[in-house]
Length: 189
Image 1 (tube, rainbow, N blue to C red):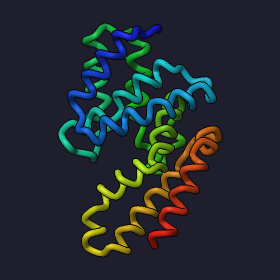
Image 2: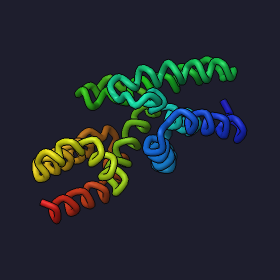
Image 3: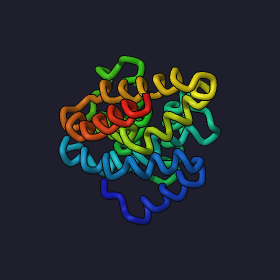
Image 4: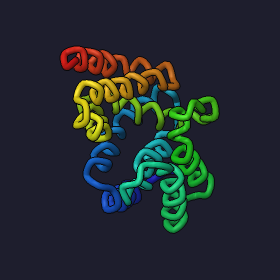
C-alpha cells in the first residue's frame, strides 16, 4: 500500500491532538530511527511509520499501563474509518499491540520485522538525552524520596532497555546511546 503525504499528515495531526507534549515529542524522535532501522531490516517502511505514529496513542489520558491495548484499538478505529486496506490495518495494529512484550520477557512472540523495528526504535530512542529526561520523570518520586536510589533505578531501567533490543542492527544503532547512558550516570553516581 502506498500512503500519501496527505494521509500521513492527517495521522500526524490526529496523534498530535491526542498526545501530551512529552509523548508527541517521543513519537517524533522515534520516526527517523525507525525509518533507518526499517531499511536495514528490510521492513515495510510505511507500516513502520504509521505504527510509530500510533504506538503510544493509548497514553492520551495519561495512563501508561496497558496503553498498547488502547493504542491498538484506537489505531484500528482510525485506520478503518479512513479506509486503509485491511491487510495494512492488521499489520499496523499488530505492531502497536505487541510493542511492549519484550518488557514482559516475551520478545520471542514478536514475529514480523516491522514489529521488531518499532520496538527497537522505541528502545534506541530511550538511550539518549531525551530518554534520560523521560525516565527521570517516570522515576521522579523515587528521586525525590532518595536521590541516589532514584537515580540508580533510572539508570538500571535504561540499561535494561539496551538488553531488550531484538535485532542485531538495532543493537548496533543503540551502542552509542548505551555508552552515553553509562558515562552520564557514572558521572552522577
